[in-house]
Length: 166
Image (cartoon, rainbow, N blue to C red; front, side, top):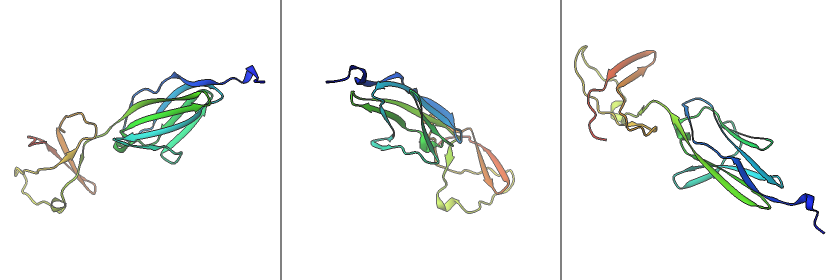
């Protein structure tokens, strides 16, 4: 005979994940609320293009569960964390999945080709043209207005006059 007090209800989301945004090097928390009896198992995933991997607790990710709340904390977010995150909840009654996108705001990064990594010499006041490919992982489509080059404790600031190609 089946005990009516131990019936199973499918896992469901009371509160779904929401898209989130944070600045680089900050901590971001993704949270949802679930119900279901028996208590649902929880798995977190991160997807980048067509690759999906399960998230394991480590120095970068903290996974906690507080009652019905499921929480993923991402420490020191970087542009590499700009991905789709999902949570899968499962029990004997079934499984459900919920997704959200994370955007990490950061200044554009410049990567100089090796031939430009050596010292450039120019006279004070001399106009120079430097073609620098840049990566804007924020996908804002905006070009940077100013470039800062740093060597040791010395900072040089340059205004960007013209963007040539994309």
